[in-house]
Structure formats: C-alpha cells, structure tokens
Length: 304
Image (cartoon, rainbow, N blue to C red; front, side, top):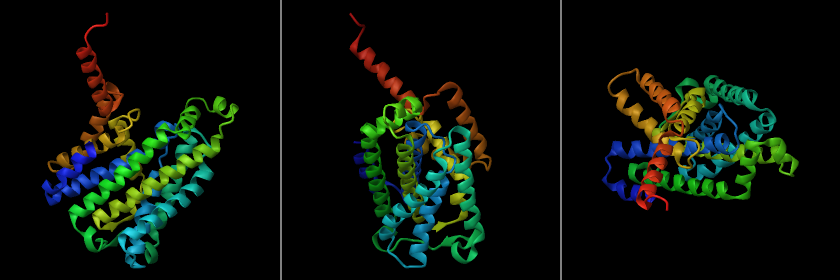
C-alpha cells in the first residue's frame, strides 16, 4: 500500500520534491542494507561507505569512460560491489566487536585515499561529473520510479531474507555465536554472505545516488557516508524492519529544513540523535508501533 501511494504521488511532486523523495528512498535502501549487518548479524560496520562509493564509481566510470547506458551499469555495480565485499568481508569477518568495526573503517578510508589521489582514473577531488542518465531516465519522474522499483525489490528481498532460515541463523549467531556454531551453523559462512549482500545493496544505493546527483566525488567513500547509515538506523529504530528507512527520511528532512536556515545543521541532527537514544531507544518507527499496539489494546477493551 505504501509503495502504491508513493507511486501515485509521483506526478504531483515538483522537480525538487521528486529529487528529495528519490534521495530519501536511496538513503533508506542504504540504511536497510547496513541494518542487515547491524540488527540481524550483530555487526557494526563503519565501512559501508566503501561499497556505496564502489557502486557510485563503477557506474560513473562505465557511463563516462565506456559510454555504457545507465541501466546496463547496474548489474556490473552489483557484481563489483559483491566482489569488493567478499574481499573485505573475508579479511574482516573473523574479528568481532570494535576490531571488526575499525577494520571495516580502515578499508573504507583506504579506498577513499585511492579515489582522492588517483587523478588519472577517478578524477581525484574533482570527481566525475556530467553523469545525467541518457534517454527516459534523464528526467526526474521516470528516475524517481526507477528508484522506487529498486527500493521496493530490495525491500522484498530483505523481507524474504528476514523470514528465511538464513535470517534465523544470522539472529542466532548474533545472540550466541558459540551456541549457534555448536549446533552446526557456520558462523563465518553465514556472516560473510550477509556482508556480501549488504555490500551489494549499498553499492546499488551508491550508483543511484551518483546518477541522481549526476556526479561522483571521493566523499562517497568517506567515513561520514557510513555515519549517515548508522544515524538513520538509530533514528528510525534498528529493531523495526522499516525503521532504517523511516530514520533515513527523518534525517534527510531535518537536514534539508535546518540547512535552509543555518549552516550548523549537524548540531540539530546530533541533538535529535541524543534525544532518540536517551528517550526513544526503539526509534521513531518503534514509537509508531507502540502507539498502534496501544490503540489496538484500547479498541479490544479490558481483558475478561
């Protein structure tokens, strides 16, 4: 129903509204990919920007250097993001807690340094510009629908994953890895696959973001891009399936509204994050679920 509503609203949105809605969906997809690791697998990755940036640069280089049509770059984005995630995950997944977090951050910063310094290939801090998709998707409304379809399919995939035996295995590894492995669940295998899937979806989000902005710069690989996924997940609530997407929308709206008034918008985002952590630990989506549940109890009346 929500996706039908978003699809129906498309023709009624302004050019700016379509861009804002597309960006919210892309950030929501990125945060949902991060939450596959964070909530289901219990892994705090501070290096999701590595895959976001790899996806963006893969699309940008294929479009600008190889003159590929934008749509044909998306399978290549998924494949290369998966390969990079396989390499980084293989080296990182055996570590736990802060060691895993810092190693993923180190890989992301390494890729950022490469993109920033390799002028001949990536354009360095000048980036890659003029990436307007050719044909139909060069217009805002068709591109919005493309992003909506990508978000919907990714969400359906993550939902099926959540209810699958693989999803239950991830949550058992998160809760007690030693006990899960003692009953035959492969910890390294399951966590590595989750890492690869999260990397693929993050790469897809990066490619869509690059096409939306029509440019790609090294900051797509910087640690602050990883922080955006973490902030969105905390704001929305990692324990609610759609929580990261809700948090991404809230984060983007706060940033846009406050940025129009002052350059110190990170202060207000930080204040909102602190209020959420201290007073609403289940996030914005968790509050909504609690209110809906309470209303349902009131409607049913007191138990007899």
